[in-house]
Length: 297
Ligand code: KIV
Image 1: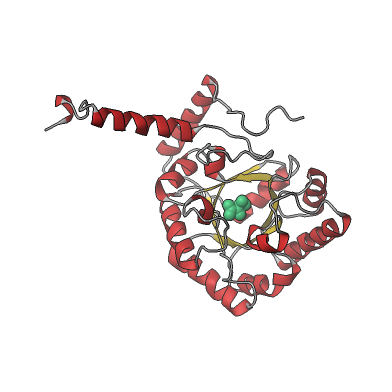
Image 2: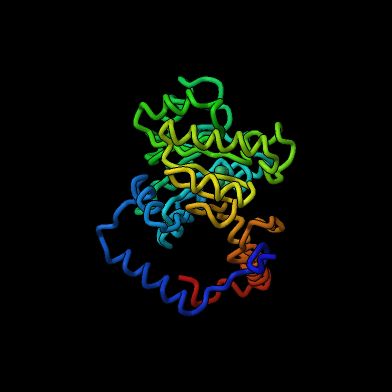
């Protein structure tokens, strides 16, 4: 069993903190921060350097994520869950995605910003798919889009690519199809579904996608796909052999209390930290100890 998995909180060691501070200092003195592009990601795969991707949905979080050295920030439609409190990703709208994306773009100085096309904005009609992708690019200033699915959405992908918009695919567990799957369990364990996933991955590469997210599939299958594709794969619950990894920021920071799937490594327990801080504030206000004389004009 992997001893690093799930709810264990990973503490920064003092030399990690030092390295992080050094990176942050370098980035803040270096006025010429070089933007990560889709070409950079390809070069990273070519030289065997792993790609770090994390979600963000607002300006302040995105500024921290970018400053910490993230390669790609994903404005995921998981905003529907973690920002809006919906049970699924289906309700979020294109306008809402654009609002989140434009806030993230204003903060990201180095990271490539990729935005999810939300459910209903691209599935059945390639003209609508292009119009949705153009709105995201134009109104948010993002650098590319991501959409879920394989051969069935090939026409939409091709049309978006003809407009010069970088496209990232997403295979395996595709949360916009949750009502088709019925559960959030591991996908493509059976041979037929694994074969379809491999075919879809090849198709996405042939069409011209710059990368593909592989969500919750067996590590062995993700390894096979990653080795067979020229473009980078980014895994979430897909094991160590993907070319990069992505997590939802609320999950890895422990804001999402109680969400501890096997694939998640939790790097902080912000629910606890914030709950304590906010509780202390409530106590201080009630006790009339905040504000004191030094905190007034
Ligand atoms: O919406 C999202 O956050 C995603 C990641 C889980 C890959 O698509």
